[in-house]
Image 1 (cartoon, rainbow, N blue to C red):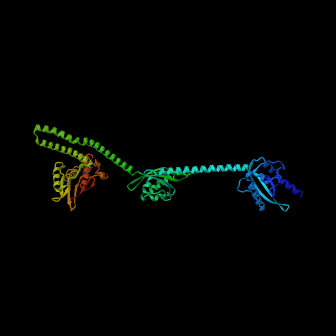
Image 2: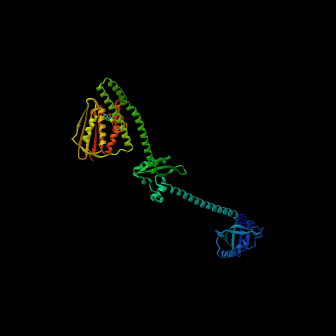
Length: 503
Ligand code: ATP
Ligand code: MG
């Protein structure tokens, strides 16, 4: 029994909390030293005090009611759980407390309550600070959210107004994560309509593989700029990789811009430049060609004129006639070169227009053959297989030029004693004409360039010519809605074919 009392004494004094034993009337009957220290009383001074003395004045009345209710129906609990309780010291100062109540029946009758009281100022202060901190954190989060929303809004409005294009973000499976831009707006597409859809599905099938392979490079960390043609439109795509916080590229940003108008302008500029370049090239070629091609006939004219003077003294009319003929040929040669060049200039600038009339092709052919009598090489023979009359609606001037060119080539590129065969057939709609020679032919490798301006085959370097004739012929034939083709074998001969509509 003694031991129990001692044990009780030790426990009483050694517990951390202030311990106060209160009887059923609310009077303190016992307390430990800690309780006195907490409330600022001297030893033994608290005994006999009403418990309300320890409650701050403004709560005292309420406390008495609570206490009486508790005494009637006591239970072990912490007091005012969830409430912030305070105690009042002897000197009237107030401090935060935590109280737990334990009902106790002493000597079988009287009801007592053991109150365990601890000073929680430090904890309360910490709690308050934590609260403040939480509050300021919450405030910061709120502000940050507003800022984020604002910057998101800013990005959105920047992207939405991106002129003539679309800014998109895709994941690795090319699904839309983001899309904005005037380009969408113009198509009446809302961003929300695209999110989660497959970008590649929106690309025309013929461009899909190209776009996919380019964008796959971007997922490998490369930047890509490329153009995509969709029908008559051209799009420029700039794509950059986007890395997450681990440095892995899990998204790509693609800026798509419609550059059709710019492209068109570039093309026009390019073709104008090309035309200009061609014209310049043509002019410089003409200068070098003219200085070369004019030299021979001019030398001939010069020497023949000198010889005529000499033969005149001797009265040798036969020789004089021969040299006059030479001069005439040379002049014709010069005229034809100049004519070719003029035709070319006119064709180039679109100044040549067809003048259609009813004409007889056979008459035109006869005229040409007569004109060519002087130029024919020795022993060369024209064979003409044509009906007595072929009437068609065409431009006689152009027709004459075409046939003259083909026949003079046949003369020029075949040997003495060669046969030149001219055949014409007709049906209701067409006239088909061919010029066949047994001359030097055209090397196969040169055949595809025969109609190019200034082009001359590799086997004619020793024969005079400018390489303009066939180019002009080809263009004239086009003006007359006709067709031209040829077959040729080097060393065997060449045949040119022409088809012309009758109307
Ligand atoms: P020109 O402008 O004085 O007519 P050219 O005869 O050289 O000069 P084209 O008539 O355009 O020019 O002919 C181009 C080239 O085609 C010739 O240089 C020649 O190589 C080839 N060619 C044309 N006709 C024949 C032909 N009948 N046989 C062989 N080669 C030919
Ligand atoms: Mg020619």
